[in-house]
Image (cartoon, rainbow, N blue to C red; front, side, top):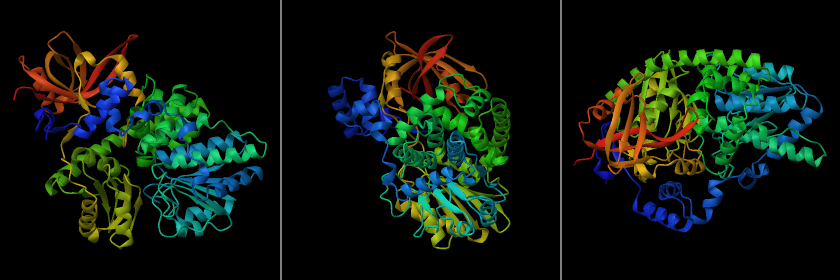
Length: 581
């Protein structure tokens, strides 16, 4: 049943509100905690029980950080790394080319530097080498190093790790493991098949952080003092959000603490990146995912693969500024490439149908560095898992993104095991694949079947999910600050979104390039300002500007707007519908 009777809003979406059980839970929380009803509706949606409220609103690493030794091979990995430090061995860090890989590498490089040891950074070229360790690179690294640490990759790299003759290899990863593990010193991975899955939601940088925690424990037991790990949480937070790890459990605490560290502006690379992105407020999880993350990723997508990791590990302001400027330029180029692929992929997906369990598209020469982003755009548009593939010669290389509750990585791995893909792997929310051109249709058909069995495609493509109703008079700064305490928000914990029913448009005008500035009132004196980006890309902006006194239901997210030292509440408007029946 639609919320407020909105079956098709001005943007064509059906509004979906909280169910009866969630409303009941919100009411109980409000009565027991004396917190605002709006906040309780969000906590109820997140599954927070009354006794857990205080701890949930103030998550601490002390309470939530798991024992690193609960992961298999952890103690062995830390012992080997510390032995390399003690013996001043030659260490190489082999990392993936995305944000998670870059931050994981930077964590290790920073930690080793503080212990007086350098390391070789190796990040493969996305196009020439592909994802993960390859035999030529591992052979070359092994010839000049005693220890190779693979981060955010390596769990399925049996051949390349076997090729690293003469060097020890430690793998710190989070991608789905196979039935067997590569022959090396240690494979620390919460998604190994012999793990219980309790920490499956960790990104690779969080796994690296836990390994450094274990190293710190062993150093203390030996009477030594290690680097300050809390100061490194800015990198862990960036990776957690950018890799779309669900913000639950320890991930919430890692991101919350990491944002506080980042606000202190102590890491030259992140300071330079924030400045070039014109980030002039305290960072939030939104900034990590949509402002900083894409810029770090840009090097691996269409430029030099190691720029992002080098920036994050840099301790020199001038070097950081130069690298940040280069990443910002590459990000602009990436957006142009992405837009061309997005338009073509969307047209193809629409022709195939957007209501299937899987939305997919494949095109000649589509840049492998942007297919993952385009897949994410298709997923957001359709509320379905999406795969986008760039074809080149007899093969296609693609990337997929999934929706909550649908494990894409496991299905991709199943296809690879069954021979329908040449290669494939990943985790629940994201995966990569290589497929033969002549096997493309059969592979996608089978993938669609596997995803359908998990429930993909059952949700409405255009559903807008709302936490409940909120009147303009209740939208105050105190409520916004309390909402922020329930965060950070992101994957697995969407930001609060409310409907304001039956409001009047007081002021509306187009600003910038297609954006809408508007205010709403309840007719009783309470008003709220709102901003809607891209409102004139569709009918929403014009309809509100031409309101002619009509009343609307509006929906969006609350935020605190800071301007000239003044703070006020505004709505980030996402949708509206005429209030009259």
